[in-house]
Length: 451
Image (cartoon, rainbow, N blue to C red):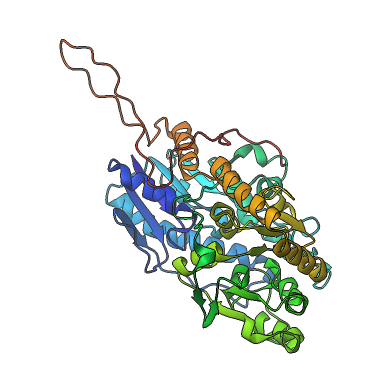
């Protein structure tokens, strides 16, 4: 089969399915993207030129749509060149968030299209206004509603959709949900696995040394910002450090802004929070290593005694899935995005997202209770093996592709019959690229409603 993928930051959410398709040796994979250094052997990467974005003269409420149609035009021109060279995909798969796929139906009207629908923006029942420290401004509501313009155009292209969690799917209107399949994303369970010896080793990260006698509290976010509860986490540190002298804290993440806004007056959220609580923190026991190598990130999670994951009611991070797979003792914030993965007292603990004192007490209680810690670790890993297995994810993904195209890309075609002989069908599934073979139940149904 011929696959055309589209995502401005190659490979985005499509890393595992692309690797799986390439590993079969039977498919042609083309990927349209902005230029970047990422490479996957066997993939033909076709870059498009990023257009001028966020033009100041464009009304702020229309700016996201303006950016999207400009990207759509740039991708169209690039894809037109592929069609001119005779390329016709059997299916187009991409992320609808940036508008890149909006015009591809005009080039290949008969090709099935599978779009990634990540989140439907609301001004009154999700992330906006969740945190009273940053109240919603009614004058901003038109801009928030307008952020769904690309969502609406994409939903009316006539293609299919996918969404990674029931909570994210539930943010879409009732009329839109039947057009989108719930496709749980998987984790590489072999790569993201526990290390029973991790707590017996000395770990060095960001200039800090964590010894076996230390209690390590970890926090991870792409960027250190309120959307991921960074301000709450920072405000727990004085209480944690007063209570125990053996606690060390590693907070992995950059100083940019991935979601929401930067601090009023400029600067970074890390600087802002250090100015607020830094005088009450032993900075010899806290480290901010920035964005680290993946192997360093995994080592920190394996060594963690308590892993804190906080978020507004928004998109769930891959780091939460990976922390569960590694068998971390997770302390998660009480939002729908977290509760879909973490059951309090079973495979993690739930605490109010915006309450530093309760978070600190929850973490301290966990550090004191070895039996509870052991139970949460074991159940977190078991949960990941049941619900987040990469083999199941890829199988569901390929079944969805098969439903749209009539051909499951994981199933080898039946050999042509030999004259005078009737062979048995030789149908077998290609071996998954990563992860063990598991018999866990997988979500394959079309979801018409949220959780």
